[in-house]
Image (tube, rainbow, N blue to C red; front, side, top):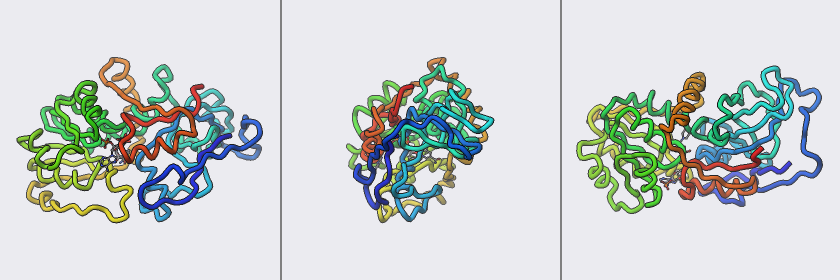
Length: 341
Ligand code: NDP
């Protein structure tokens, strides 16, 4: 059983050497151990790399989930196949997604809380690390509930080519919004325009004045900002919001590796423009996940949603894939293949 364990807690930018591949000898586990009632043994197929995992690599976790334990496998979302079960709700052969370990096999002790059964195994299973799983549901809840969008509104999405951003932009197009995205390379900008159907897009790394770039794309201002990056981008957006605009604060990836967060100067715009800024955590909304799963599966089958994944092969490449999120190495949803069956 190969695993990726955390070697040390992290400050600043994470490195591959903060994690380590550990190979245990002996046969692959095939049974839930005696005396572990209510558990399932899962063979992990696909793992998800997610920005929030950086918070868990710190020791002083001010985050909403616990810090990873040094010497223990990294945990995160993934897709797997049940090998053995002592839980009445799961049986060998079931396909599941949810919280698992960065290892070939994981014993999940509380599967009814940690795992969802996969209801559309006819779609690519890796989609349950993103579009049909946590990231997709984040885009859906964040856009439709937190932003309360109306047809024709002007929507701006940052980190727009990533797992969440590409879907927010497409959900907004589906209800007739005007959508602009930003991303960190010209290739990603092309993807936004040509593959995901954004009305406009720009490479934020090439703009010397972010506020001017936003003014160019939104001469009449922004109704809805889907916030993924924070920092200087948030500051520029505040200057360009329309009166009664809404901001869904989904994440602020530009801040995750900083020991001292960037200051935000333009907060007074919240008052003068009567803005509503609301943060949200997707796991608070899982009671409604099934409704989303059905809708998203239908969108994929009807060809209404395009989806791009960045697939790293092999558990040993998971640390580099995770770290790559913070330099924008990933193009689309970052997935790691542990095993295809
Ligand atoms: P992505 O697939 O978008 O990957 C991260 C991307 O962020 C990178 O590819 C990079 O793209 C961009 N990025 C990295 N560093 C910076 C930086 N310093 N400044 C600007 N952009 C940067 O990740 P996800 O779609 O999974 O996550 C997007 C956001 O949503 C994150 O903030 C995440 O924390 C948040 N999130 C929140 C959830 C919630 O429940 N609230 C749930 C899931 C995600 P580029 O090349 O464009 O710079």
